[in-house]
Amino acid sequence: MNGRSADMGPYLLGLRLSGRKVLVVGGGRVAQRRVPALIEAGAQVTLVSPEVTPALDDLIEAGRITWHARPYQHGDCAGAWLVQACTDVRDVNAAVAAEAEAERVWCVRADDKDAAAAWTPASGRVDEISVAVTAGGDPRRAAGIRDAIVGALRDGTVDARRSRTKPVGVALVGGGPGDPGLITVRGRQLLAQADVVVADRLAPRALLDELAPDVELIDAAKVPYGRSLPQEEINAILVDRALAGKFVVRLKGGDPFVFGRGGEEAIACAEAGVPVVVVPGITSAVAAPASAGVPVTHRGVSQEFHVISVHVPPGDPRSTVDWPALGRTEGTLVLMMAVERIGKIAEALIREGRSPETPVMVVQDGTLPTQRELIASLSTVADRVSAAGIRPPAIIVVGDVVRVGQEVGMVRAERVT
Ligand SMILES: C[S@@+](CC[C@H](N)C(=O)[O-])C[C@H]1O[C@@H](n2cnc3c(N)ncnc32)[C@H](O)[C@@H]1O
Image (cartoon, rainbow, N blue to C red):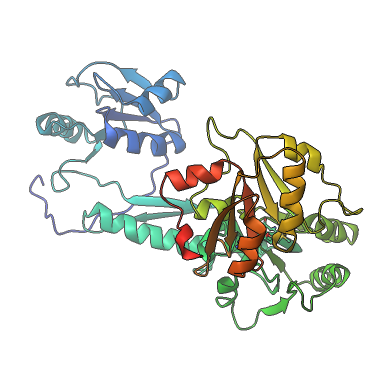
């Protein structure tokens, strides 16, 4: 290390590279990882390499970097503020580093941390906060620590709020299908900042355990066959708490705008002059089939999928669903709130043209540890569902994509007999 002690820790700087030349020597995977961050920092990247990866080629094509398609030559470091020696040839990296050293330009070497004048920290950004970690030159360890810090900043475990950025009003947050890992980063951040949380039964319950003790938790459980808060009362709670200056998170299952009455809540807030943000969530309509291995679309099998609420059965005067059209289509049907009405649904689909042999999959408690699946056909599904004691919440998938799931061997249908 040029006679300097390898034991000394690095002196961390935040380089503001906007408009400054950075030389990258090498066009392989290391360069491919480094260049996007340099571009994001505004650097004028000059890349020297006889060949480049397709990802770097895209950046060249887009005019984001300048490429010299040739090997490194002495003199390439001229005018650079920073040099990245990223080739897989040690002697070339050493030559680049030597030229940079002579020019008093900082040089990072991917192949030899001890010979490098500078290290690239594992870095991350959360809003305006930049995190950079070095761990004695061990990049994996640094990346792990970076991930932990960035994750904690994102989910609010490390509270980096500035008081003026404290959210106000109501956030309608999609909690995802049930697994607490399937909420979005933004949803988790807002949840960590809530004064009041109004949660549905289908919102991921595990996330509620993490709330601080002083957070007011209101259970708006819409328990099937049980007691629930009427929608008007929920709207009133959201508005009242927000008008009292609290930041309210309305935590819902799946996506707030997919059969979640999120639109009604957003309108109620808007009418009361309460600021409202909507954080989309992963809907169970797609996630429950996926977690059972079934894609809702598949090339050559289904190029459409229909998501249908069957809270009222076919033939009911309140139903606005075009069952004849669904009987004619070859597309995937994803039925929600359908368990109790599956007999009438199957009858209607067969009557309207679907084959009785059409495969059907039922996924109860999708993405949760209690997930169960059942595979049947349109002609057998009603009996199978009742024999297996399937209960809501469940998604019912109708169509040949169910066979695709079986084909890839991910479906564990034997779990329900
Ligand atoms: C009122 S809807 C809410 C849908 C939710 N907004 C979404 O995007 O997933 C309730 C229905 O969603 C489905 N559902 C929700 N979570 C589920 C899960 N984890 N597994 C299977 N179905 C689920 C069931 O069909 C249930 O009856």
